[in-house]
Amino acid sequence: MSKDTTPKISRETVPQYFSRGWICVSRGWDSIAIEKFLPIPDRVMPHSGGAADVLYRRDRVKEIEDSFEFKVDTWRRRGLHRDGETLTHILQQFYVDPNFIGLSKVGLLRAALWHYVEREYPDESPEIQKYQVGLLGDCPTCTKERLMVNYLRHMGTNYEQLVSATEGRRDFYVFILWQALNRIAEEYPYLQKECRRQLALKRNETGDFNPPRGHAPYVTRAHKHRLARRADRKWRRKYQHL
View (cartoon, rainbow, N blue to C red):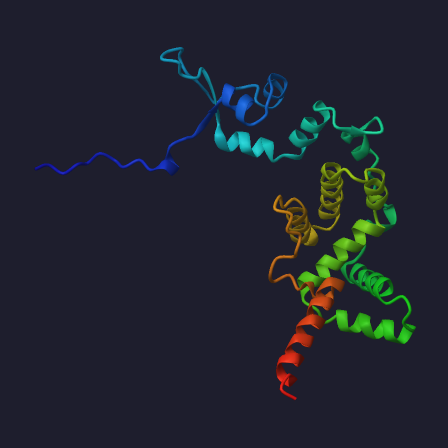
């Protein structure tokens, strides 16, 4: 009995394609978007047996759908606007304060820590605030990067003004946040990882906006409340017999 030498073809090695009709019906594309983003098909099939005549690679389609240009174009063509302003026009109003460009890492970190402490402890004395800044100086790198990105986003751009102007439009908010984080990542490459993390966090369709494990969110007000409740439950269990 001869051994079967036919090579095994796995699903991963077989190119997967989307037909033009499938893209339009199942993925929300239209002829205008196809002509703009997919002008050249990846494969052309003969008209036989009802097979699709134009095919596009699956990974290519998904890569285009995840691009910023495609999303903005989609929102613009759907006519989603607020007070006559399209999303494109709103994003064009975004700007970065020149005073926040080219800051040193040490200077940016110190400014971010002081900004956080003055906002969280406004009624404390300068000595207490300085002490809190010293404590935050020993926090993990990921926490420092998060505070720096938040500081640049709120103080170095008009992010808050644009968000206020589009209040109630969460779809616009995600794109404004995207614009802000992209500009921060361009100016400060060492903050790119944190910018990607914050963007993925806000775009989570499940609605779970809690920071992922390992990013030390203990300086947030909500986490302080959780720690206080946890300590209270622990105390009650320990002394409930008294």
